[in-house]
Amino acid sequence: MEIIRAASELKTRIAALKEAGKVIGFVPTMGALHEGHLSLVKEAAGHSDVVVMSIFVNPNQFNNASDLERYPRDLQKDAALLEGTACELLFVPSVKEVYPEPDQRVFDFGDLDKVMEGKFRPGHFNGVAQVVSRLFDLVAPHKAFFGEKDFQQLAVVRAMVRQLNYEVEIVPCPIVREADGLAMSSRNLLLSTLQRKNAPQIALTLSESCNFAATHSVAETKQQVVHAINAVPELEVEYFEIVDGNSLQAVGSWEESSYVVGCIAVFAGEVRLIDNVIYKKSMS
Ligand code: PAF
Image (tube, rainbow, N blue to C red; front, top):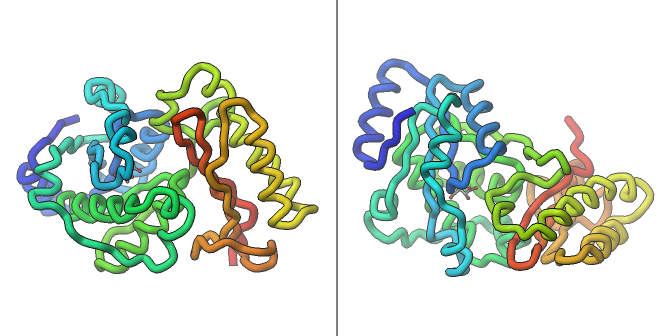
């Protein structure tokens, strides 16, 4: 695996690979890699000839300065984890390489980014759209791989791709979980021992709520999930919404949509964790 820091060098390498007919698969990350990221690399390798990963902690998507400062960074460890995987090029740009000029673009995603994460992290998705678009310009991948844990991010990235006419196939990848069910996240590293012990209750409650949902209304299911998680020491629900999986707008009944997803954000102390569960997804 080769580490590339300059955008100009990356562009030259990618152009040569494309000239040779290679399909480029791209995995954008902010580092602090874990098995979840490695599963994206694996998925990318199955769908492309050359896997490129980026590690860039994007300042534009943090609406909280201390969150940005606390975000775990350890390039040596990340690079060591990637050795022996299918990742061939690791792009680690500076802020200046990604944003030679400040990115002033303001995206309009309609109601998609007004709810859930967007409501509690104003400006977050505009920053995500900015950086993913910049990275797509630099990497120019054929395919890009995103985890379904960041359910709303996937929807926003798809909308951005449509708006800017990128010819990139967005490939969603399933959530990877620890043995106890906790969704893998770089932020898990920041949990105290007690928080780490209790955090799997989020996934457990979501999973149990699927049975509960079979005999209860959307409102009752929401209430049950929030109540159960808030009863766990150190955990506090920021939001739990049951939404249409495409529009991300709240549904009032199970019949309202054929694709229904529960999306949650929970504070474990200062650490913000997200997860989701699919209640219903008809194949038609
Ligand atoms: O999901 C992430 O790690 C980030 O939001 C992304 C997509 C790499 C953009 O900075």
